[in-house]
Image (tube, rainbow, N blue to C red; front, side, top):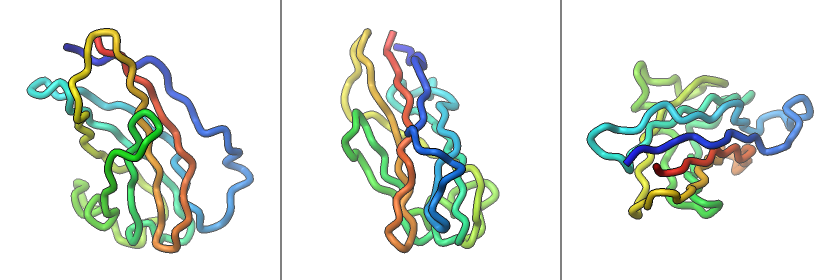
Length: 133
């Protein structure tokens, strides 16, 4: 089974009118599907966080608009190559997403992320849709 990318969409919020200190996802993209595990997808998140406290927060993975998993950003930062500084105000993170259910040919799945910083401020929620074929 292969996964195809259908669409990439933003959250509709104006990046020029952004609350200082609130994290923002500037780009979310599907990098690749694992050849060994068709339900494992590598995604990349490009972010900005003007006050540098994102490492104290969470990455919420959204599947079909419901929270599927939460990852501690301190661990995500540490797992990058090279690791991101804990006070980073911007960067890219790569994360492996594994769909928990079998995806049938023709199924569409909406995948998004929300970043939450140490102060509880939540980012926009960009997403993309994939279709199994």
